[in-house]
Length: 397
Image (cartoon, rainbow, N blue to C red; front, side, top):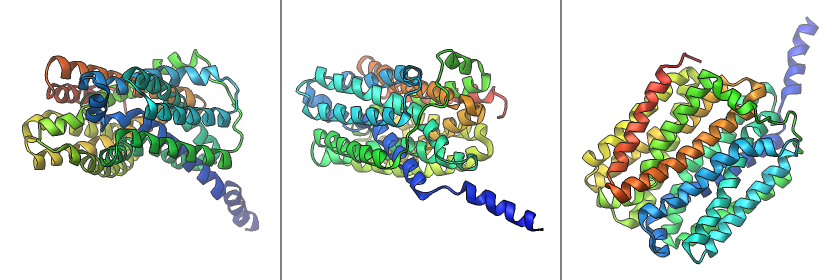
């Protein structure tokens, strides 16, 4: 009897996670929030930044395309390049690079320098996001890995649904350069938090270059990566130009864009919570529901969003739909990948996520400049709805 009653207690004591470890995971989450926000911050400030730099809205979209392309290359390459380097040192270096890049944006005298700063942001986000999942996994015992991973990647979700709206609000109340300066300040706080809380993280098993294409050969992982590309690409094709869309399609004043994007973010948080619960039960159905709702809202925006009230309503449902997408696709990848290959699979999906951001913004810019502003909404809808095909054809995981 004694052996039976003490063994569970002993196991529980051994698996108890010190509060400091959870704070370290939270610091990684804030770092993820900062780099993802840095990547997408120009979205809500596109009109004012393009005007200040004397470029068209389509050309201004390159401020999102450039870091996305760079991050898509950095995400799979950096885990290979750093070999057995201490992951703590690498994360600190990447966050510091993000701080420098945002300060360069604040001081940029012309569009070329601004794009150079965005190139540096791409390096930072691609590397940091690719390593974040592996860091979270190593900070806690196996039974707490799902919670730690959710916290770490919750930073990316929060950036998608709150970072851009908050930055837009700051930029709208002051100046777009102030928004970048505020983000640089947040980066310095993250550096201090990681220095204080994160222990040494030597590599257990360096990622080999051949491991990346091997992940893509797995049909379940491949479907998850494809779903990421279609969902994020469709969303970003339209969302990159959400400020001019709201102004021109719905007749909303530029000063109200920040508050509306904040409402978009709040809706996204709700979507993230709902999708997280649904994905834990059936990730396949959760992804299908997200893609259908997102595609429907984008397709209907030019039809239903013709005035301020209806435009705001469709925008909020759009936020609800996309808010659950990052968590759902990441849950798919984590369920499909073996634990020893998690860093490689996450790096591959991170690469696709950022490539989709870049190509979505780039293609959206071409549509805006060559066709019509409303065209990006229909392109985004088509890509989002195609996600259902990729997910439906894959067996349940």
